[in-house]
Length: 455
Ligand SMILES: C[S@@+](CC[C@H](N)C(=O)[O-])C[C@H]1O[C@@H](n2cnc3c(N)ncnc32)[C@H](O)[C@@H]1O
Image (cartoon, rainbow, N blue to C red; front, side, top):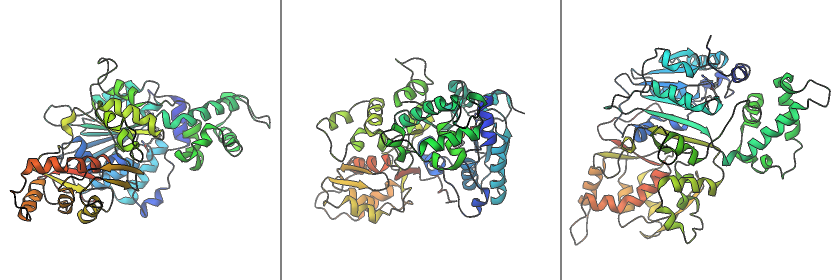
């Protein structure tokens, strides 16, 4: 029996495991979580050099009903990696275990405990820790983060990373108004004379919420932003999690940099490097030039020169629809695979994109700047493809390194002057790479690192 947790939060997740799931669905489909795709983890957390062999260890802290755990375990099925799934809700663990059994996964260890006890559980250290949708439900989220860091590998030579998701303030404005409203309504009891306040049971609170949702005017802030949220349509567990949670806070970009990065005024933070990657959209909702790309203001170029933190904080307010912040936390920027090194293999990701298709799009204005309209992310942005962008994109096949691509480029060269060298080609292709990488559609791995299958 774990200790060191909020009793109300635990009873919620014992009664209403989250996310709601039917383990039988695992016969048909694999749920993929955005942060746990191994090629993404490799690119952003291990400089593109992680083999995921040699005893790789992942912890899923507050793993709930198992989405991240199952996805990691499936991808790592053929390796000697171990995944530890920890949660304080036994009901959630039971559902996750059933899913793993259906899939025949034997690389998961199950721990029923509070993540706040991690320093004393003797689980060893981890290369990667997922903690998604959990820290914002703790009385002291920083204590939770410190507990996670206490079991993160930290031996200098090998990088390790945390994949974190916490709520975002701007996109959840209507949610917090709705939570405040439901606290008032539930404290007043129900029209049919049911008890009020704490004594009101979860089912009655959920019924009250459903009643109100069906009657609120479109001017209500939750109704205005309803399309940003899905949980209230996902049954009792979803309604409770979104609108009735007893312990729930959110963060702005600035607050996350203060807490996790270098701290307010350069002091007090964890000193970690933050890599934001929004589900389906990558970094694009954090970049003013991408958010404003449809109709850029005169100041767009100047904003692009600002420090990362300032750009991200502005973009969050510009776009308004970020409801969760998903990010990797690494020791430093060197944990991201470097652009500009010929030993790295570029590959398309998250979409069935080929070099040929990308080349056609980037050559749509015959080598001149064009407006990229990216359907999946909703981004419209002007891109200068450079002189050689389309030719380089055409040679990307997920196997060749930049060095090999550039060799081929030079072998195909028909110009009068000498063919450009690697440095010139990297410089020419930089804006194309930046754009596709910001969308997480073009990633890198070191050429000596294998391709991860299980997709
Ligand atoms: C909103 S759910 C998220 C589940 C999962 N991480 C996901 O993203 O789908 C929060 C989970 O955190 C767990 N949790 C909350 N506080 C915890 C604590 N102190 N220790 C361990 N688990 C905790 C809950 O039991 C619940 O399963």
